[in-house]
Length: 132
Image 1 (spheres, one colour):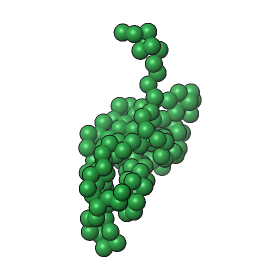
Image 2: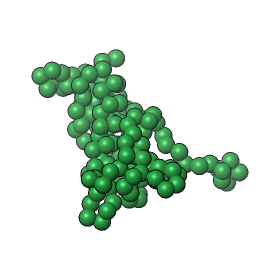
Image 3: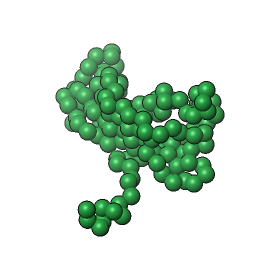
Image 4: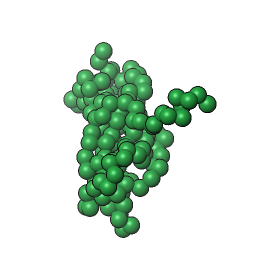
């Protein structure tokens, strides 16, 4: 292992696309933030990126490879980072990483990631090519 590898601190990949604070209303019975709430934040962040790439309306058609690593506590700053994985004829694949800064320490921790697939649609809801 190279010396630089030892000193490398994990950091988010992609662009900061969405940031919010985990609130008490978003908790499960254990007091942690619902995984579904996190998925909805990720979907919004991915939609922002996919819509920009598709230059218009795009809808979620799949979520691939979702993984949760650690619970999120109330008060944590939740940051969604997006990175375009692939642009197809009518689709956009976006990787989303969620990192939190806990209210007590502000240390960044990766809590989940997943790949979201979008299809560009026109005003009638039909699939359309992604505009170049």
